[in-house]
Each structure stands twice: as C-alpha cells, then as structure tokens.
Length: 352
Image (cartoon, rainbow, N blue to C red; front, side, top):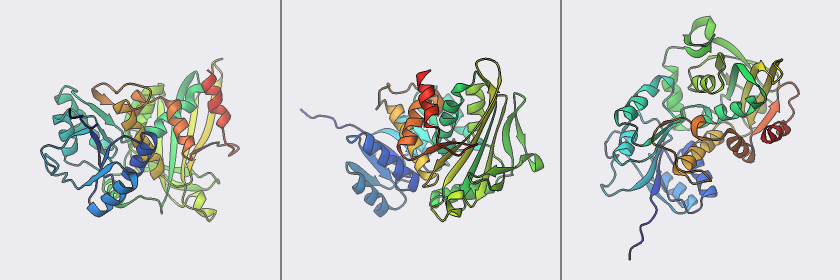
C-alpha cells in the first residue's frame, strides 16, 4: 500500500529575505510541514532548503502559466513573497484549487487579484496580505484599540531606516512604488479619499523624539482598519531616514507610531499613543505575518482551514494571537508618552 505524502507549500520568492524568514517560522512551528523554496537563484534556494530540512528547492518562471514546473507537481498552497506581476502564481493556484497568499500587490494593484478571484466564483482562498508586515500592523492596532468603546481616529506613522530597505525584491518593489504619482489614501469624515501635494506631507516622530519628514501612503491597512474598527479618520504616513536605533549606534530599527482617539466605556474622550518596534528592522515582522497567514489558511494550528473566497488578515487571524507571536519573536510595544513597555496592557485585554 502506497501512502500519499503530504503536499508541499510552494514559496515563491522563498530564497529571499522575507520568504526564507517565513519558511523558518513555519519549520519551527510545524517541523513536519513540507516546503518548496522557489527562488531566482537555484543555489541560494538549495542553501535555504538544506537549512530548513524537509524542503525542496526549485526555480520558477512567473511569466508562464505552468510556472515552468513539471505537470505532475503537487502543492498544498502557493505563497507569493515577490510581486506576482502577471498573476501567474494566482492563476496556477486557482487551476489547482490551492490557497494563495500574496504580499506585494499594494492598493493600486489589488483590483486584478479581487476580480480574478471573483471570476472563478471564489473557488479557493485568496489571502490579500499586501498590508504592512503582511497584516500584523492592522492586527496589533486592533488589539491596542480594544480598550476603546468607540474608535474615532487612527493615525499610523512608519519609519523605515534607509539602510533597511530590503533585499533585491524589496528594492525592486520600492523602485516600482517610487515611480507612481505621490498620493495617499485616507479615510476622512467617513469617506475614503485620495490626497496629494501639501495635504499628503507629514512628519513621523521616532522613539527618540526626532521628526522625520514623510508623506501619506496608499496602503490597504487604511480601509482594513477603518472598516474593522469603524474609525472615520484613518491615515498612514511613511518616512524613510535614520532610525533611532542607528542614531544610538545600533542596527537599524523598525519603528511604527500608533495613535488612537475615541471614547471609553463611560463615554469619556480617550486618546492613546504607542510604538511598535523591532530591533532587526522590517523583514522579521513581514516574515512572521506571512507565516501566520499560511498557518491559518491551511488550518495548521487550533483553527480549521479558511473558507474559499477573498480573505484579509484581520478577517481570519485573531489579533491577540498575532500580538503574542510578535512579542515572542522580539517585537516591543511601548507607551508613546513614557517609552516604557506595555505588556500589562495586553494582559488586561486578555482578561476582558
């Protein structure tokens, strides 16, 4: 009797910084999970696969319908940690009824993914994770907002160190985005609008108090948070410059300022400010977000596999679980006023 081997998760871009990091998380959590590392450079893909153990290494051609793979290839999911610009990875997943996750589409590129899924009647799960950290920033903000009875405003400010712009794929994505007209996407007075010019300009305050010039961006975090919390004012600003970690002579840090406004359970005005930090920059958080998405889609944890159709991280992942994983892998949450850790805040939320 032949026992069918469990199918492998196909990691497009699996030899890159984010893809390899996601694969490492999945290997740590689920040692028996089979993984296929697909990269541009086969030697690098093999090195990552050897490091992981129980993994295969291949190259793929994202311009071909079959991705350049043998006809008898079998997988359990397709994960795109590089830009699937022709949507061949998505089409491959749909033809084989496989869950699909992508992180590089961005607001202006989401329509084709949504339409492709709708045209096939939502026959397979499509996890749209082109949010910051593959959705983790949205989930963390939702968890922080739990002490509010009503959230009226959310403002996010991300500071990326200019020495932490990612590997080759990340640099290509940054170049692609920099070629687009500068415009932000915000919710203002309950209405989603595009803004530009002076209206889009902003400053992001680093943890050490330094203001770094930036501008509003069009990230799916804005509609995700607005619709999940009901906040009528939502904005996401981005600044690129020297992080507070590097100013201290340390490695570049990832710094996110999270400001929330609303009312408490007694109806009194409530405002809170927080920082989300990671000492190793942005890639570890994005890798974690991808790994959590794969885990949830395939039902590898305590919850079943997700249903077919278009999904977003906040629709399928529990904010408290995501925050727990973030803290576990070295993320820190600080009170913006005191710059002290707020672990007790999450403990209080868990008791609610």
